[in-house]
Length: 106
Length: 106
Image (cartoon, rainbow over all chains, first blue to last red; front, top):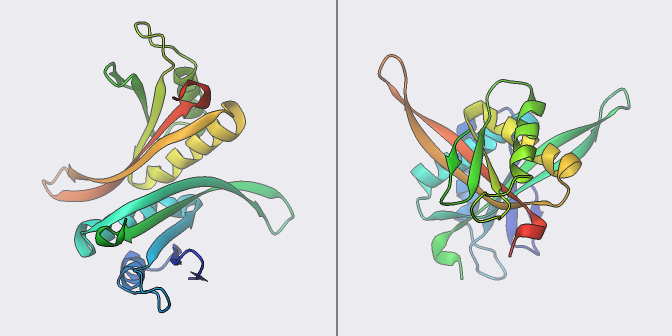
């Protein structure tokens, strides 16, 4: 997880841990407030390659079961270039799902 | 593939065939025009569960390599309930990536 103060946005990177770990991490972020601005935080769920499916699962479980007033602010798809151990460059798709609590949206 | 005349939108469902099959199918749709309205069609790439990652790959390959003026009109995430053979209901995440050629957008 990284913190980007400027955007009042915090990320959750999807890896290989149990899916509920990520759901809980995202829920904690959405229930926080920024210390300076007092605004509720946005949470961006990020994943690459095969883990994109898991990212969508995390977002949907979060939205349906735990933070029912959550909305998708933005969903971004992109391609990242990764260098393998043998120096070859490969293209990997990635997703960023930005989530916020509805009440806090203007 | 299904056809929805009302929305001038045609879908590509992602399955287990080689990924380029789906890229080509989507490209064909984007290069078509509706016979009645003369407007360029939108293409919606749809996938469920583990195939969501493939759907993002299809969309990104299409956009980066084949239809470089394509834009994402909308990306929708949802949860579908599927009934297994033994009668159990399971929740499956799904994605819909709506794509159009930029020139044709208002």
